[in-house]
Image 1 (spheres, rainbow, N blue to C red):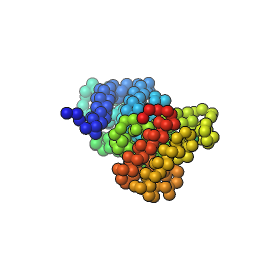
Image 2 (image 1 turned 60 degrees about the horizontal axis):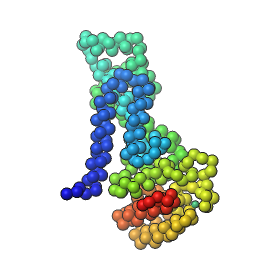
Image 3 (image 1 turned 60 degrees about the vertical axis):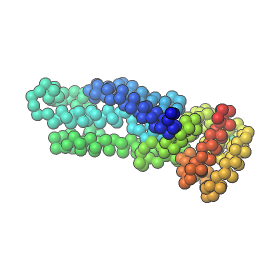
Amino acid sequence: MALPSVFLDILKWLHFWCYFYSSFNVCVPYTVEECSSRSWKNFEQIHTSFCKYVLGVSKYTSNLATLCELGRLPIGVRITLAQILYWHRLEQLEDESILHCAYLENKQNNYDFFNGIKYFLKSNGLGNFLDDAKFYSPKYVKSFISMRMSDQFIQSLHSKLNHFENLLLCKSLSPYKHSDYLDEIRNVKIRNVFTRLRVNSNKLKAYCHKEDVLCSHCKVPETASHLLFSCSYGQLPVIRNKFDQNILNVTPTFSNKTINDKLSIVLNLNFSSQEAVKIACSFVRDMYNHRFNRNP
Ligand SMILES: [Zn+2]
């Protein structure tokens, strides 16, 4: 008996993340001590490539936008946390073991490992952990530092993602988690169209990093909102009219919204009924496929 598609979907996502993290967790302990920036970058690259694979977007898609869409933190955050916890464990040692002696030598001579920890804690206003390491429990250190690092990353997202107006319009950074539409849309092809429009990983001219950003038909910037709500290329107005009529029956207030609100509602599937969600999914898929002559 075939499994319903919803179970297959959940299994696929579980398989992806379990496979990635089982591989990753084997490697983290090595990076804790071998903390060169090159090894960090390699892990970061593997992590973001994997996230792009899961989302089905091109390798040229912004790393930050990809992480943001999935609600994930950079691997560097996890590696730094592992380093801090390892350092904290070494600080708790009181015996005469080789490990403790080696750590004390590292600390007294300001070698790379201790220096890196010291620099990180001081530059983040966490010098108190450095001075009174034994006073804090491992559980407290873990929860406090992971919360501080996540907050810093999320705060920096707004300024770093200022070219991703569609994503910032649709995505809530608080709470920081993967976008709901990823669970809501079961059809992979339709979900992929939504992702491409949200993270600017598509062929619309406004996002192609070329001088000509104008729609060849309407001579205005070819953005996601232009495609969905005003472009007059080919059959797009016909598909849009059909959508307007259908959505009016289930969500009468939609037509009174501004273009930005409409874009946010549609790309976020922020509707109160499943019927409206279905109509919006078909609309976005048909508009995108028609514009780029893709088969449904
Ligand atoms: Zn146009």
